[in-house]
Image (tube, rainbow, N blue to C red; front, side, top):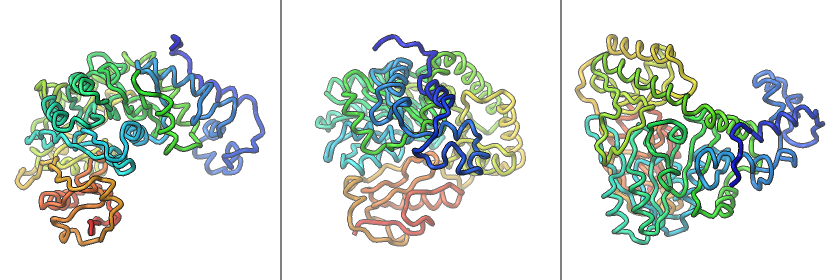
Length: 482
């Protein structure tokens, strides 16, 4: 690959040139640069709607890029130290599914932790691959699942030498990292590919003294949420591949599910954001690390809260920790994380990323300033003063070991019946149940419904978690196999 200038943004530049040409549009979209929908134009602004355009020769085509999109992808590959990069406009969900669909066919085994995002299991439903779960250990005090231990992965490979790939979260939602380099070396020795879900790891490629990135560790594919810590528009992501992955086949896989009408707003935002991180990323993420560390220390000084960090590292299940993640354990003030999440929004006008049964996560990234961080710290101190109560009766367990009976695809498409939730004990689920965010399934298609699962769902419901997944939106009924 030629050494390209990271100061360029070819898609953005092409859009600017196109706007200046004042071309008369007899193509889609039908709003015709906003003239046909004044309310939309007023809402988004003329600049925005004027570049909401269709694929054409001057602007290239996302399905088969040969000019400005192709150059933008080359620049992204160079910036992320990958052999190839693909612009994704269906979010990191689309990138994760493209990774799995590239590597797996019906009946193939893939080794993965159970605390994966639902997009991974959705991909198994689509392709018919079979999960081999490495059940992560749980930090009982925090109620969070940890990374995959290297020896657990080695055992899974030894028991399943016919598996085609290993998938790793890098990092987890809470910032916990597995020994990715060790896993890559072990998998490659056994002729398996390694896929990394880096939805929350964009900054690993640009910051200093952060956990190892997937491409640096030698992984074969990585799904990177540029819109999370990278600053691009929501739903825009990158799919990265290493040198031993056939890029033409990956493009074919992407085109099976990704839209043929790629949004130039999303692609342009990826282009601009990549340029920003390539030029300024190191300094930007130094500031992010400083803000997160400052907040962690201030929150821990309040008392009862525990904003955890690198002190958790044990070189195994917690091989490394992403210090930009501000995860705070709340149970010692007698409130579930989701309750603190709701109070912050409803009483203090602070919207954090998510709350689960025992923790909250405040996402700190390139747009944050010290004054917002101080406002969050002050609000948490006041919540402790106003709402603190005894911890009795609080549930913290975040991970329930699944009993996988049939493959996700077989269960999803099987003949099924809808039963009252309490009548499903011992039956096999044909659908998902999860709290969103973070979107890690409590129950997935093909898994047996146990008393622990039902109790967890009921408790999460009682605490106000946003439960999603089942056909019945009230979550009163679940679909199970006949």
